Picture 1 (tube, rainbow, N blue to C red):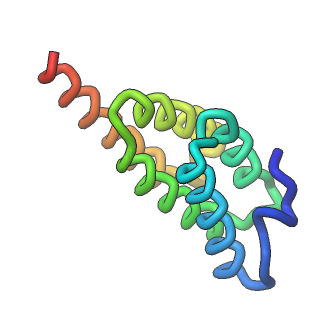
Picture 2 (cartoon, helix red, strand yellow):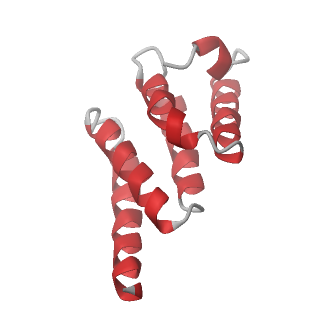
Picture 3 (tube, rainbow, N blue to C red):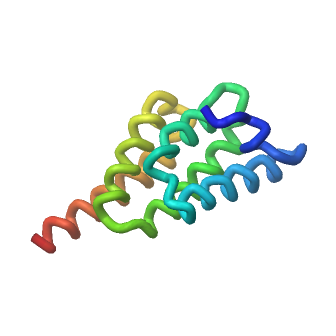
Length: 113
């Protein structure tokens, strides 16, 4: 897991959301997503993180994943879906968004081949 003092800076839920999103953006820009994606997701899913913060962070993650090339995007979407499924009642909107995007990606990938 990623230490909470790195992810959650500031004192308000908005500060926490912003710091988590910035940290995720750093993972993407520094090409560290492959090695740290699951750790990041698990760090956001811990019980001590409010659902309000984690929903906003996952919405940001989903938007960023949509910018990736098809194959890595599908891989990360599956990992995110698996992680979120464990907390289905809290993240049904995010799971639906991930599944819809994966469906669109797989459909477009099949049209390419």
